[in-house]
Image (cartoon, rainbow, N blue to C red; front, top):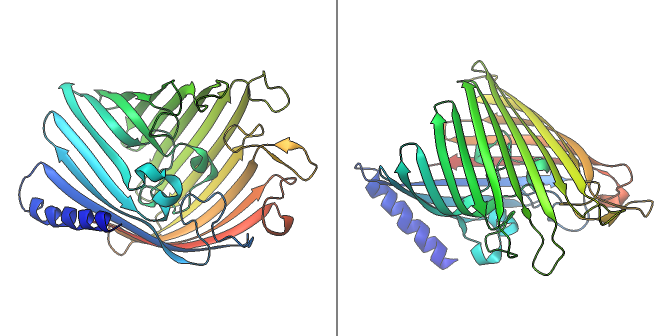
Length: 354
């Protein structure tokens, strides 16, 4: 911990120096803090299905991070160090303080080859609240990969079309967990300045070494649209299929699907309101795992949720958010406090980028 603080202080000092000239180096930071509450009072302050704002009834730091970048005509590199509840709950202990560490070069115009540690290419939301409409993340985002390790080749076909090929150690791993690699693609289209369509996928055997191999094909579609200057919309849809994974027939393939849709209305220059809906259905427990419902039947997780949030930005790079969420699992999945299948939650958070 002392080493991390020392590094952060050095990076901050460097940012003061680099900001005064045209250095290829740049340094930035981000801090998010929160207080959360929910009705799932099961004696554990760690809240279920909460990759962000994950502890109940406590003032805590979601994330504190510092990013250093190097960028010249043909070479670039990124190193992000972080600390807080988000990395401690979502990152492996061996890479706990490293969010991103990658370097790349450009062998031709519009073509880049980068290798190292990255944040995931999949999802309509990310794990960092600053990039989302809300601080909480939807169930589809919670079960999607967060980070990845490998090499990627990206190319801008035109100002409106871009693509990327990813060769990775696997789904949500840094160190490889088997002898197989996973491959994924990204294809994005910007029909105009107010809309964007992105397709992502990831294909590979994600089972740990020594287990029966099961090829998984994960598909993700993201839609973004700005309706004038006041309304922003985003939607994400996931569909995955994995062989040899059906609960009732271990030789048959199983599937899951999920989705989210959110609309952000800028009611005033510094104030906005967001409504988000979400659904998740993994009845064979491909990602959510298998457990017994109230009838004693083996099942995977199925749920939906609705969130209402408000955001105030005193300046462009800082925010204060208040949001409430209702989450409901399948009626026979009594997974919350006092055998309830529903949970109500609230989060207040503040964040600033510098």
